[in-house]
Image (cartoon, rainbow, N blue to C red; front, top):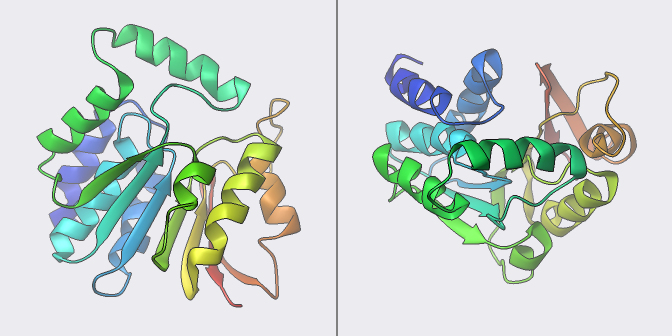
Length: 207
Protein backbone atom coordinates (compact mmCIF):
# COMPACT_ATOMS: atom_id res chain seq x y z
CA UNK A 1 0.00 0.00 0.00
CA UNK A 2 3.00 2.31 0.49
CA UNK A 3 3.34 3.08 -3.21
CA UNK A 4 -0.35 3.98 -3.33
CA UNK A 5 -0.37 6.42 -0.42
CA UNK A 6 0.03 9.38 -2.75
CA UNK A 7 -3.17 8.47 -4.59
CA UNK A 8 -5.07 7.85 -1.36
CA UNK A 9 -4.10 11.37 -0.28
CA UNK A 10 -4.93 12.91 -3.66
CA UNK A 11 -8.32 11.19 -3.63
CA UNK A 12 -9.07 12.44 -0.12
CA UNK A 13 -8.63 16.03 -1.33
CA UNK A 14 -11.31 15.61 -4.02
CA UNK A 15 -15.00 15.77 -3.03
CA UNK A 16 -16.30 12.20 -2.84
CA UNK A 17 -17.55 9.45 -0.58
CA UNK A 18 -15.00 6.61 -0.68
CA UNK A 19 -12.71 7.34 2.24
CA UNK A 20 -10.47 5.64 4.81
CA UNK A 21 -10.73 1.86 4.94
CA UNK A 22 -13.18 1.89 2.03
CA UNK A 23 -10.66 3.71 -0.16
CA UNK A 24 -7.94 1.27 0.87
CA UNK A 25 -10.17 -1.70 0.06
CA UNK A 26 -11.02 -0.33 -3.39
CA UNK A 27 -7.32 0.12 -4.14
CA UNK A 28 -6.59 -3.37 -2.82
CA UNK A 29 -9.17 -5.05 -5.04
CA UNK A 30 -8.09 -3.04 -8.05
CA UNK A 31 -4.43 -3.88 -7.47
CA UNK A 32 -5.29 -7.59 -7.28
CA UNK A 33 -6.75 -7.67 -10.79
CA UNK A 34 -4.88 -9.51 -13.56
CA UNK A 35 -2.50 -7.76 -15.92
CA UNK A 36 -4.15 -5.51 -18.49
CA UNK A 37 -7.35 -5.47 -16.43
CA UNK A 38 -10.33 -3.47 -17.59
CA UNK A 39 -11.86 -1.47 -14.72
CA UNK A 40 -15.23 0.25 -15.09
CA UNK A 41 -16.52 2.83 -12.62
CA UNK A 42 -20.16 3.84 -12.90
CA UNK A 43 -20.53 7.26 -11.27
CA UNK A 44 -17.34 9.31 -11.20
CA UNK A 45 -18.46 12.81 -10.11
CA UNK A 46 -15.23 14.82 -9.53
CA UNK A 47 -12.95 11.77 -9.82
CA UNK A 48 -12.17 10.88 -6.22
CA UNK A 49 -12.75 7.15 -6.77
CA UNK A 50 -11.25 7.38 -10.25
CA UNK A 51 -7.95 8.53 -8.77
CA UNK A 52 -7.92 5.51 -6.46
CA UNK A 53 -8.53 3.10 -9.33
CA UNK A 54 -6.23 4.84 -11.78
CA UNK A 55 -3.51 5.15 -9.16
CA UNK A 56 -3.66 1.42 -8.46
CA UNK A 57 -3.25 0.70 -12.17
CA UNK A 58 -0.38 3.16 -12.56
CA UNK A 59 1.53 1.76 -9.59
CA UNK A 60 1.08 -1.73 -11.01
CA UNK A 61 1.86 -0.39 -14.50
CA UNK A 62 -1.05 -2.37 -15.91
CA UNK A 63 -4.76 -1.92 -16.54
CA UNK A 64 -7.11 0.82 -17.69
CA UNK A 65 -9.96 2.59 -15.89
CA UNK A 66 -13.12 3.65 -17.72
CA UNK A 67 -15.30 6.14 -15.86
CA UNK A 68 -18.95 6.47 -16.86
CA UNK A 69 -20.87 9.57 -15.80
CA UNK A 70 -23.24 12.07 -17.45
CA UNK A 71 -21.24 14.81 -15.67
CA UNK A 72 -24.38 16.88 -15.17
CA UNK A 73 -25.06 16.37 -11.45
CA UNK A 74 -27.97 14.04 -12.11
CA UNK A 75 -28.88 10.91 -10.14
CA UNK A 76 -31.24 9.86 -7.41
CA UNK A 77 -32.84 12.75 -5.47
CA UNK A 78 -30.84 12.10 -2.29
CA UNK A 79 -27.52 12.21 -4.14
CA UNK A 80 -28.50 15.21 -6.24
CA UNK A 81 -28.83 17.34 -3.10
CA UNK A 82 -25.22 16.62 -2.24
CA UNK A 83 -24.02 17.03 -5.82
CA UNK A 84 -25.64 20.44 -6.14
CA UNK A 85 -24.12 21.71 -2.91
CA UNK A 86 -20.64 20.61 -3.94
CA UNK A 87 -20.94 21.90 -7.51
CA UNK A 88 -22.10 25.27 -6.17
CA UNK A 89 -19.15 25.40 -3.77
CA UNK A 90 -16.80 24.70 -6.67
CA UNK A 91 -18.48 27.04 -9.15
CA UNK A 92 -16.58 28.38 -12.13
CA UNK A 93 -16.00 25.13 -13.99
CA UNK A 94 -18.27 22.36 -15.20
CA UNK A 95 -18.34 19.01 -13.47
CA UNK A 96 -16.53 17.43 -16.42
CA UNK A 97 -13.84 20.13 -16.28
CA UNK A 98 -13.36 19.44 -12.56
CA UNK A 99 -13.06 15.70 -13.27
CA UNK A 100 -10.57 16.15 -16.10
CA UNK A 101 -8.51 18.58 -14.04
CA UNK A 102 -8.32 16.24 -11.06
CA UNK A 103 -7.26 13.31 -13.23
CA UNK A 104 -4.65 15.45 -14.98
CA UNK A 105 -3.22 16.79 -11.71
CA UNK A 106 -2.93 13.23 -10.40
CA UNK A 107 -0.90 12.31 -13.48
CA UNK A 108 -3.43 9.68 -14.53
CA UNK A 109 -4.59 10.85 -17.95
CA UNK A 110 -3.06 7.76 -19.60
CA UNK A 111 -4.80 5.44 -17.14
CA UNK A 112 -8.25 6.95 -16.69
CA UNK A 113 -10.73 7.50 -19.53
CA UNK A 114 -14.05 9.32 -19.22
CA UNK A 115 -17.18 8.18 -21.05
CA UNK A 116 -19.81 10.90 -20.79
CA UNK A 117 -23.36 9.55 -20.65
CA UNK A 118 -25.61 7.47 -18.46
CA UNK A 119 -24.70 3.91 -17.56
CA UNK A 120 -27.25 2.57 -20.03
CA UNK A 121 -26.21 4.92 -22.84
CA UNK A 122 -22.52 4.07 -22.60
CA UNK A 123 -23.19 0.33 -22.24
CA UNK A 124 -25.00 0.33 -25.58
CA UNK A 125 -21.67 0.95 -27.32
CA UNK A 126 -19.45 -1.13 -25.03
CA UNK A 127 -17.84 -4.34 -26.28
CA UNK A 128 -15.04 -5.27 -23.85
CA UNK A 129 -15.10 -7.81 -20.99
CA UNK A 130 -14.64 -6.20 -17.57
CA UNK A 131 -12.48 -7.42 -14.69
CA UNK A 132 -13.75 -5.06 -11.96
CA UNK A 133 -17.07 -3.21 -12.05
CA UNK A 134 -17.56 -0.49 -9.43
CA UNK A 135 -21.18 0.65 -9.23
CA UNK A 136 -21.39 4.07 -7.60
CA UNK A 137 -23.83 6.01 -9.77
CA UNK A 138 -27.60 6.49 -9.50
CA UNK A 139 -28.56 4.87 -6.20
CA UNK A 140 -32.31 4.74 -6.76
CA UNK A 141 -33.76 1.22 -7.08
CA UNK A 142 -34.56 1.73 -10.76
CA UNK A 143 -31.28 3.49 -11.55
CA UNK A 144 -29.16 0.89 -9.76
CA UNK A 145 -31.02 -1.97 -11.42
CA UNK A 146 -30.67 -0.47 -14.90
CA UNK A 147 -26.93 0.12 -14.43
CA UNK A 148 -26.46 -3.40 -13.13
CA UNK A 149 -28.44 -4.97 -15.97
CA UNK A 150 -26.54 -2.93 -18.56
CA UNK A 151 -23.06 -3.73 -17.26
CA UNK A 152 -23.11 -7.04 -15.38
CA UNK A 153 -23.19 -9.08 -18.63
CA UNK A 154 -19.78 -7.60 -19.44
CA UNK A 155 -18.30 -8.63 -16.08
CA UNK A 156 -16.12 -11.70 -16.55
CA UNK A 157 -16.82 -14.88 -14.65
CA UNK A 158 -14.40 -14.55 -11.75
CA UNK A 159 -14.54 -10.75 -12.02
CA UNK A 160 -15.23 -8.47 -9.08
CA UNK A 161 -18.41 -6.45 -8.57
CA UNK A 162 -18.18 -3.60 -6.04
CA UNK A 163 -21.42 -1.98 -4.85
CA UNK A 164 -21.08 1.28 -2.95
CA UNK A 165 -23.77 2.14 -0.36
CA UNK A 166 -24.93 -1.44 -0.04
CA UNK A 167 -24.53 -2.13 3.68
CA UNK A 168 -27.61 -2.98 5.78
CA UNK A 169 -28.80 0.26 7.37
CA UNK A 170 -31.72 2.70 7.29
CA UNK A 171 -31.69 4.48 3.94
CA UNK A 172 -33.49 7.60 2.86
CA UNK A 173 -36.34 6.76 0.53
CA UNK A 174 -35.12 6.08 -3.00
CA UNK A 175 -31.45 5.76 -2.04
CA UNK A 176 -31.19 2.02 -1.35
CA UNK A 177 -30.83 0.65 -4.88
CA UNK A 178 -27.46 -0.98 -4.36
CA UNK A 179 -28.53 -2.54 -1.09
CA UNK A 180 -31.55 -3.99 -2.85
CA UNK A 181 -29.25 -5.55 -5.44
CA UNK A 182 -27.35 -7.36 -2.69
CA UNK A 183 -30.64 -8.82 -1.48
CA UNK A 184 -32.02 -9.91 -4.83
CA UNK A 185 -29.46 -10.55 -7.59
CA UNK A 186 -25.95 -10.29 -6.13
CA UNK A 187 -26.45 -13.55 -4.26
CA UNK A 188 -25.45 -17.22 -4.36
CA UNK A 189 -25.06 -19.10 -6.64
CA UNK A 190 -24.45 -16.25 -9.11
CA UNK A 191 -22.04 -14.37 -6.86
CA UNK A 192 -19.71 -15.18 -4.01
CA UNK A 193 -19.76 -12.39 -1.42
CA UNK A 194 -16.15 -11.69 -0.50
CA UNK A 195 -16.51 -8.91 2.05
CA UNK A 196 -18.47 -5.90 3.18
CA UNK A 197 -15.99 -3.10 3.79
CA UNK A 198 -17.65 -0.04 5.27
CA UNK A 199 -20.58 0.58 2.95
CA UNK A 200 -19.15 -1.30 -0.05
CA UNK A 201 -19.92 -4.92 -0.87
CA UNK A 202 -17.38 -6.89 -2.90
CA UNK A 203 -18.57 -9.99 -4.75
CA UNK A 204 -17.00 -12.39 -7.25
CA UNK A 205 -19.12 -13.36 -10.25
CA UNK A 206 -19.51 -17.14 -10.37
CA UNK A 207 -21.70 -17.62 -13.45
